[in-house]
Image (cartoon, rainbow, N blue to C red; front, side, top):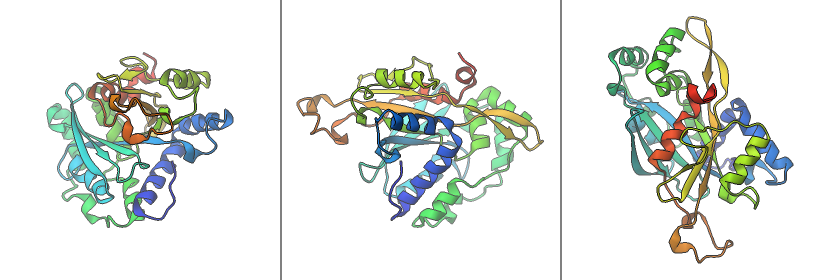
Length: 302
């Protein structure tokens, strides 16, 4: 997922992906296997369906702040999603041109959590008294890219992290990882025959030793049957906390999406089909289980 660096959005997406690729082992593992098998000729041949971010629903942060970046870069805000059990809200954003990835942004409803958890989160975020996005030149891709890698609050202690994790694994992930790219998504239907269904692609992933999220089944399918998704399970990495303790925590993962052709376009030949002819958007039940790619139950082998 690389773009010619001639405008702000390209700079931002390239920088996000480069940091993510260097820290998520499965990205290069999958790409290299696709290259070796002749499925793609270069990284740029892989179509990125969407990227995702996690945020905290507190004053001056959350979706209301974060969305300003991508709205300024030409994205359009689309559907709202409610994840009741996980206490999350989310929206997805459609790209300004079809070759760019969709964006999925979620937000923890901090006010729905216990007072203890709210107090820990407030300890680190209360000092943010103005929206930090307001300080960025949103026409400057390099400034945006640097902001998305910049810590907005201090690293917590290991005990505070564990306390958050106990009530909300999402909260624990965000308090340490902040705006780090949560995942990118390979468009399976864009690959060559033999790899362009999730059944085939998941078999390929298992053959190279990639562990898959099995929450709700390895393949998560929308009610209309037109959007199917799978994902890897995050690896653990050593994180150093404010009390100098090192704890293994979840990082990011890779997702895979197969978008079927909409029924009204079923008469089109394979050569005629483009992204506009396929199922768009997201599905609450699918996404609910994809979130668990960073959850302890998946990482430690449910």
